[in-house]
Image (cartoon, one colour):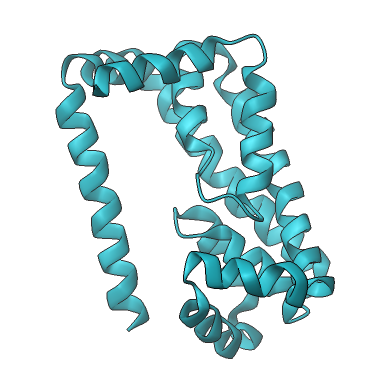
Length: 194
């Protein structure tokens, strides 16, 4: 089953419109969608290593633009869209913590969330809600999202063939390690938060 999912993802990465899918996922992930663009970025960089930095740039631009949409939702449409999204994803507690610390650490909160796999949409919407300086928000978003995607693309560009061979030979182990890392990040986040 894992092999079939892996092959399907690689097929999507090879699709002639894969760039559009990557941009679309990057855009909506920053405001409403729960799945990060890395799911497409990684296989696309593995399949077309010579375009890895192009894909990173595409992800960065689309993600920042999606973040601006999230900011607008928070600023102007909180009660219509923002609050229901926080309830849907069960992120109300995280949002309250964010609001209380935002005034002092706004730039760094946006920067850190943009680098990690934590739900970036929470930060984009919250930034609009609390009225963070829009220019500061865009700079923090571009810096963090760009850093994340370009580091990822750079590693895949440099070590792509080795990574791809390892993943294909040890798919179950690779998925297990990835899941374990996500679980550890969630646990670390809960400990940090709590």
